[in-house]
Length: 178
Image 1 (cartoon, rainbow, N blue to C red):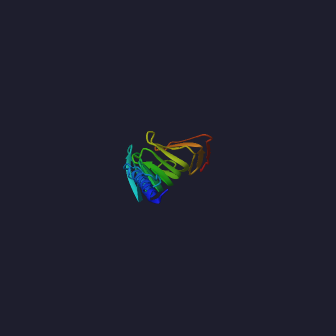
Image 2 (image 1 turned 90 degrees about the horizontal axis):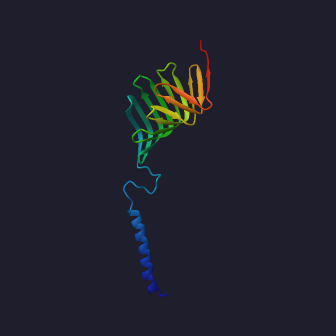
Image 3 (image 1 turned 60 degrees about the vertical axis):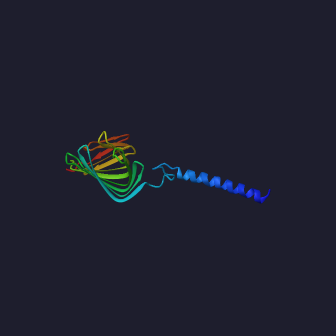
């Protein structure tokens, strides 16, 4: 084959290939990302307050990254003051929350509830917010501890009223502090 005849065909083939690649790169709809690991927005030292069913919630995160309508949070601190005056505090190294706040998950979460008699602390591997029930679900177990008691279960529910339900091989221990 003669190079003088083949060169235009090679240039044409490379031009078509370049045009196809350019079209694919430019034909991205707004908001669509090729790399799903790149966040839409990253914020540092974020604090949000929200009224949920009459309870005032304050969420602080050292870092927040938005991926669509889901926000990945790091080093989280949550405070809730219920309409009845109870105080709830939660800490978690990471979690997620949707923009509307209706769906939230925290991992390796620890917390304490004050203004209850007796006050108690708790921890779990995973906590899921249930807005309809105004409670936290612990599908991977929950342990609670107070001045004179300890209890744990493989499933748990903590209601904002202070009621705690443990299921699935639950264990409890009380000590008389008289």
